[in-house]
Image (cartoon, rainbow over all chains, first blue to last red; front, side, top):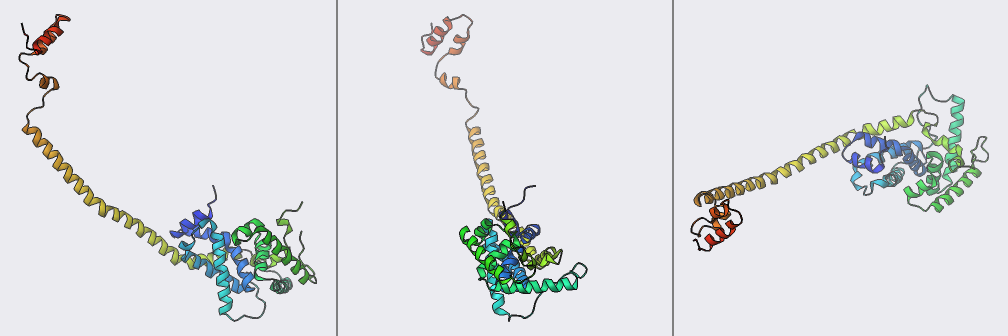
Length: 185
Length: 130
């Protein structure tokens, strides 16, 4: 069966179609999380911002004048809500590992390693600009291509490539001492 | 040749909450859907109401127009029937044409005597009956 376009889903979601709205959430929750994480730098804040953003998007879905560009519209909401959230809340200290199911979670030493790596990576990401963080997370975490990022963020493809290049270079420098630091494969 | 996606900085994947938490995104989505239940229900209700409103709007304007059209049709049909009754039975075209002609020229035309009938017909019409 042909996959429904974002436009189809937005039109149906306007009429309260749960499946269509659920599909929009499924398609863009990871990208929304990447953007929120780029702004807030914290898992819990990013999670809250994404949940809030999807609900706001549903309440204001009539404002999405071009349903084919739903993704870009949603990510703008996520960015704004994330900025509002960090403005509202005082920054919390300490590492925040997403809650994991105890049965399927990693072993304690592995979890500690993962926690340390996340912490290190968060610091490294903190050295980048918000735009660079957003682009590197959308590309390397969510897996969007240059063209997709370009279209959805409304930036020229060359700018995306340039940001990605400098962001990665900076991250490699920051993570150079890490035993399992990432490398381009 | 490397594709764009093979050129990912793989270490970034540890920032994915599902990295050590399988099923994270399904649960996350479920949480959003639970919070969206009332808004979705409200939208379904509005959609239902707007369909009913459109139909009732149509019926509100359609019923008077239909009644008016039916009344006009009834008046027209009634007046036509009255005028038909007043003017008697309808006349055939040939009767109208021949109404002021004395004698009946059609009898001359329909006599089975061949081409001469046409002459007889004209003679009757022109009043030159032998």
